[in-house]
Length: 285
Ligand SMILES: Nc1ncnc2c1ncn2[C@@H]1O[C@H](COP(=O)(O)OP(=O)(O)OP(=O)(O)O)[C@@H](O)[C@H]1O
Ligand SMILES: [Mg+2]
Image 1 (cartoon, helix red, strand yellow):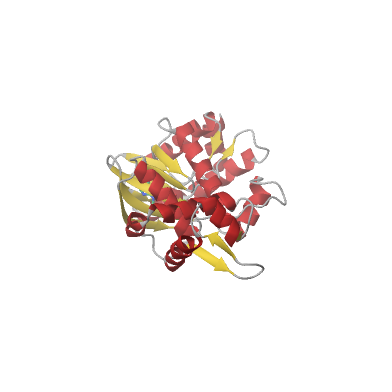
Image 2 (spheres, rainbow, N blue to C red; image 1 turned 90 degrees about the horizontal axis):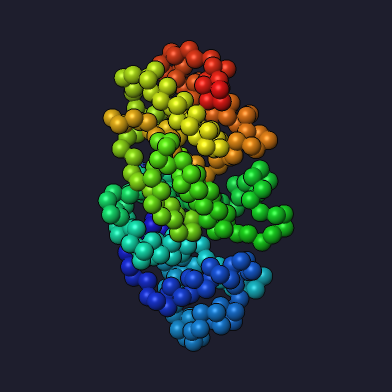
């Protein structure tokens, strides 16, 4: 189901109660048993059946009969409760169009006090397993479905924006609920989609921002032409969920990889020769 604010608006308080109960119970159950859900949602059997039928039809909840009868929250349901919270807090009043789809996220334009951007982190089961290993998201064996991995990913990205903004050119963090972050809209396009008039200056500006981020203890970890935006007002670095701290044992290797990605791009597209060592020096030096 494409995310639609219509569905959020249509949510009845009992629908919401069921979604919130499921969210809580999924910390303990992969599939929440019928009776457990009914007790938690404090609804009659008939009312709960009615609410679940709607939520299943809207693709917010899934029903399983094996290994036992139970229910699970799925992404659109999680999206809906996050949006509901953000709209109640007043940080989002309208959801606009889809502006980007990545491996692990969907990005929408929206309205808050002004134009905003909403990033929905959708970390899948597979990539979650990899993330657990690589980044130590969760202790081995802990029960942690994708919804919590996604919330964790949004939390990480939001933390980076809070730490870096406004000294580093990143989107302004506005609010977060669960796996959704709200940030300011960047007026520009990613480097892979624009042709720069002054590429040397842009490269210098990118390195300067990487340097300030480094001084604040943060390495991007996935920097490339796809995660740098440029417009009339300069450049911005976006997409921070995988950032790592400068005291991490792999810090230098990851910084080097970030810089190599950027330099390779400027070399291929604009024939700029910039030695990696010099860039490392600019950032660390
Ligand atoms: N603050 C913003 N303002 C304007 N556009 C944005 C903003 N944040 C993201 N975008 C747009 O959305 C696209 C995707 O965003 P982002 O790079 O953060 O996530 P992603 O690439 O989907 O993440 P993943 O690494 O999981 O694939 C960007 O390429 C950009 O076009
Ligand atoms: Mg990206």
